[in-house]
Amino acid sequence: MRTTVGIIGAGPAGLLLARLLHRAGIDSVVLESRDRSYVEQRQRAGILEQGTVDVLRAAGAGERMEREGLRHDGIELRYDRKRHRVDFPALTGGRSVMVYAQTEVCKDLIALQLKEGGPLLFEAEALAVEGADGDSPSIRFRHEGREDVLECAYVVGCDGFWGVSRKAIPEALTRVFERTYPFGWLGILADVPPSHDELVYARHDRGFALLSMRSPSVSRLYLQVPEGTDAQSWGDERIWDELERRFETDDDWRLQRGPITQKSVTPMRSYVHEPMRHGRLFLAGDAAHIVPPTGAKGLNLAVGDVVTFARALTHEKETGSTELLDTYSETCLARVWQAERFSYDMTTLLHRAPDATPFEDRLQVARLERIASSEAAETDLAEGYTGFPFA
Ligand code: APR
Ligand code: PHB
Image (cartoon, rainbow, N blue to C red; front, top):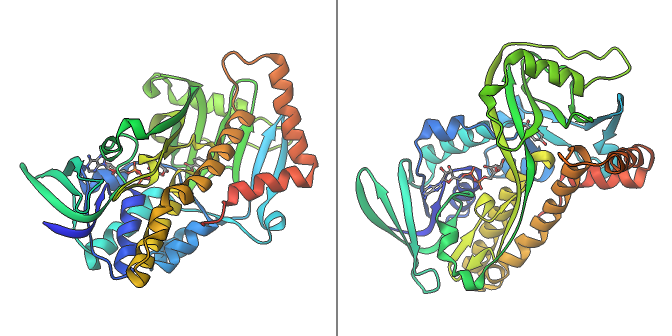
């Protein structure tokens, strides 16, 4: 088998890349190790930056998002029983975000790809990328019990943090920057209308809590829990009781409870792999970088990477110049590090480390008070949350 761009992984990065290349008249093949329903059910974040919304629209993949997505013009910060709303459009010259789950983005892109795009093979596991530093890289993969080779002009590794593509970059040329956090998020889905019409980020002495949503009738909520917590060890009542305490306010706001339909724990990590390119192999999305979920940046970073790659390859096709492909890694990393910084700041602003001192507790509250009282500090948060521009 032969193609121009071999794409490993059908998460948001791989699926959107295939779509963008198709629109640019460049052929590709996507190899995905899991089956379709697994990819379509996997629970992930659900905040799309303005730039991501614009890209999906321009790629002809925004139809259901327009109908079912919820435009959000702000978030609430909650601390010391107080509530502070951050108004995005007012602070950023009109920008906002969209609540539309990653599972839905993936479903929409898969349907489009199967209808009008190039091959998308499920249960096709990439085993290795070979010849990345030569003129004709290839992907060795297993599909329907047989090993096969996909010959490519370019390979893009969109295979997430646990994928194989990163391993094809020699260690001697690589630098990894990493931080793990001594806590995780216990996330639940519940069949109950969200108790607030915008997301609520709460800092509490008992730990962080987040109120989010999937639709007008489904809530998504998170609790900071110790690293390594087993989700099943938390009973439903205990989860609701703990959420209620961490969201407590002085006014008459109440948390609505409902049946919990799903529970899971997500670990928290910051990770950057440099460079993001080696010869004709390009890394995109979680394959190259991870952010803790507090800033909701994971999906949006993946979108920035594949937009940059699609633009660079289109430029090469139209002008013969490899200049944008050659600077792919630097271009992406500039934006990646801004998102790493923002996600780290949001995480350390709102979570309580197990060894936190009273001094650090006071500093967190002082940082929050600063955001609530200074337009400059609040604007910095609003700009970061609604997204750093694509290069
Ligand atoms: N061969 C083929 N596919 C693979 C392989 C492999 N060896 N290894 C992993 N994959 C697939 C995974 O099954 C998954 O479907 O690659 C895909 C990677 O998708 P994601 O993990 O979703 O990563 P990405 O597309 O970069 O999306 C960015 O946004 O919300 C964040 O972290 C969240 O996934 C999210 C990310
Ligand atoms: C989510 O809805 O899953 C979500 C929202 C905001 C975040 C993280 C996750 O910061």
